[in-house]
Amino acid sequence: MTGLPDKAADIYVALLGKRKMTVSEIARESNLKRATCYEHIDTLLARDFVLRVPVGKRMYYAAADPRRLLADFKKKVAQFEERLPEMLDFHDKAIQKPRVSFYEGKRELRRIYDDLFKTVGEVRSIFPPEVFFENFTEEDYDEFDKSLGEHAITSKDLFVDGRLVKKIREIRTRNGSENKTDKILPDWFKSNVDVLIYRDKVALISLRDLSAIVIENRDIAELFRNLHAGLWKTS
Image 1: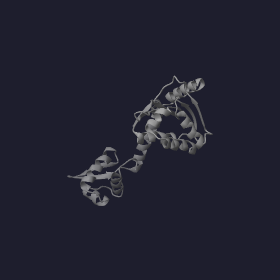
Image 2: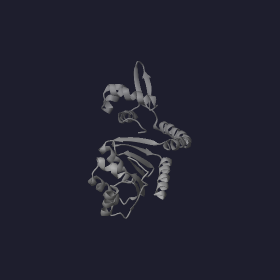
Image 3: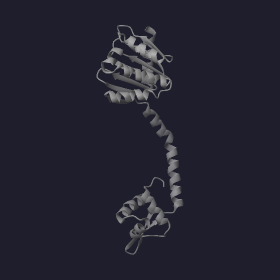
């Protein structure tokens, strides 16, 4: 009921059926303890759902006319709608700020890959096979590569040059490489970081110490896509 706690709503409904009631009568009618009634009556008073009705030395409480509450509610909705464009502008500006998440350890890194599998479209990567196999096995890469195929994800991968690139390509060929293209980076390009660019996110995964940051921001993701495209042309 217009955002009221359940017990406060029960008290208001109980009062609607009577002209006025004491706290003891409200407690009995709504099956609540007196202390609980006092707490929620204060809430109802603050929101003008309930009125105090003193009679002699006793204090009674009465429900406000629901039609008045409806009119007040409509007024607040109108005020909210009037400010909505301003609030949307603040919101739209806020969501453009980069969101950064930190991950550490193999189990946490798997969360990044699981998120990547939700991608619809293309994934781009810069991948260092030599460093990957320092902490992960051939079975680990095989599982990841199969998951790419199962989710029909298209990938463009730049491999940091090394003797283990051949092993990576063998696994990819074995699993089917219809949606995967790759190139080997020039031998001057060195990196221990797996870079994944997908949706509006960039994951920077340090495979040597098993830590990562994921940046979620459209402009930053587009920058990394452009850098990847430049490297792709020169490889």
